Amino acid sequence: MKILGIDIGRNTATCCLLDHLPDNPREYALDGVQYRQFTANAQGIKEILAYGADIAILEPTGTNYSKLWGTHLARNGVEVRLVAHHNLKQHREFLRFPDKDDEFDSFALAHYGWTHLNESEWFLQVRDPVIVKLREYVLRLAHLNRVQSPIICRLKQDLAWQFPEISEKDLCKRWGRSVPLWLQWLAGRKKSKAKDAMLAKTCGLGLNDNTRRHAARLCDLIAEEIQIEKEINLIKAGPRFAPYLAVFEVFGMGDRLQNILLTQIFPIEGFLNDDLKPIIIHKKGRYSKKQTKREISRRRFEKSLGLAPSRESSGQKDNRQIVGGSDLCRTAMWMWIFTRVSIEKQRNANAIAQLIYLWMNHPKRAGTPIRLLRTKTAAYASRLLFKALVGYVVNGEYVDLASYHATPTGHCSQCGDRLKDEICDRCEFLKVRLEQTWIAVNKDSE
Image 1 (tube, helix red, strand yellow):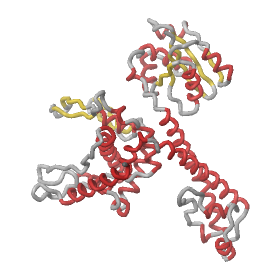
Image 2 (cartoon, helix red, strand yellow):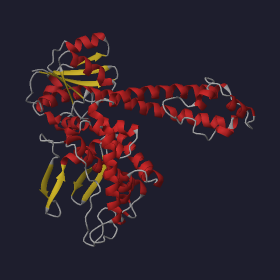
Image 3 (cartoon, helix red, strand yellow):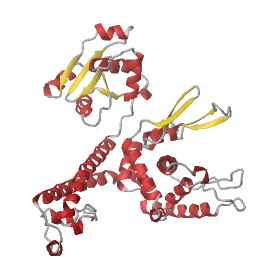
Image 4 (cartoon, one colour):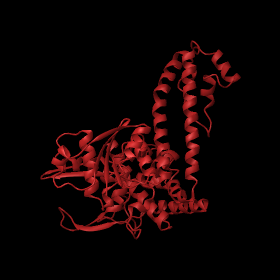
């Protein structure tokens, strides 16, 4: 058995080959290993394949640097395994490597592969090829969105003195799958007598070539966005994504958020046990000393979305903060809470958004800073999403998300209202409306 540790850099790969697990890894790493560095070209690929390794261990260094090496290795029959960054850091500390460099990292990767050779749970899950492609598209859209922002700002600043009547317009707002007409006109790519007449009457100083070039850049970027969205829609048209999209529709989630979520949670069965049931363990509480329920599957689901806090406890110190998961997904979920749940007009159009808003404004959460409250609300929404996905995707059944019970004071556990004969009028109304939404979406998906 030959295990190859590969530390990926920009256009380079530093390699360490181990054909056994050394007894003294620190000494062996310093004196007994030959390290080699290859360049990302045809010769480098040929030389790294000449190792004849059975398994290659890499870190998931973005989607660009590691993709080249991992793809060529896999195509030539080498099993490729990925190690999480924090796991490798802990393993390097375990090996007592004081310095971090490419050579020690490649040895640590190979040693990690030998240490956990038959323990698949110590390696990152290999993503479905379709999800890998979807993830590339999602990251490309995020990049294009970042690129557009400074150009839009510069364009608006120029229009403030060149054509102030339209400087406050949302010039990039799209209707359907086409580049906005205003941008095409500003770029000189489309004629419009009405817009020409507005420009002739402006109090501004007139458009110059820089403004037209900025508009042309935005036209090209938006055209690229539209093409990527078409490719994503072709991917999502597959039957295996249909139940996921149905659940997202019930939650009132837009296309961009749906795409991001799919790259993190598909397939949902990956969070469950062999019997396709959520993993739940019962353990005595640290402080209460009572039996407590720990929902491991749901916790992993929240973690993958970047919404579950990690705990660091020592003595009297007990800190919690969100570490790991997808930053892009965490931001997208936070924005969804901000736009769908917090705005009255938007949440009134969706039963789930109303349900989440009730939880968000429960009396016991009064006084929570608004940014923290939205973060907590996003985590609560992810718990509802997990419950809905497991019920609908795995079991094919409708899930009642508006469940509630009476608190010791006789109030509703969901919204905090006073119960009348054990019934909460507000939550019962949402329960009926939510059931109707599920039925309507289920009919559309059929």
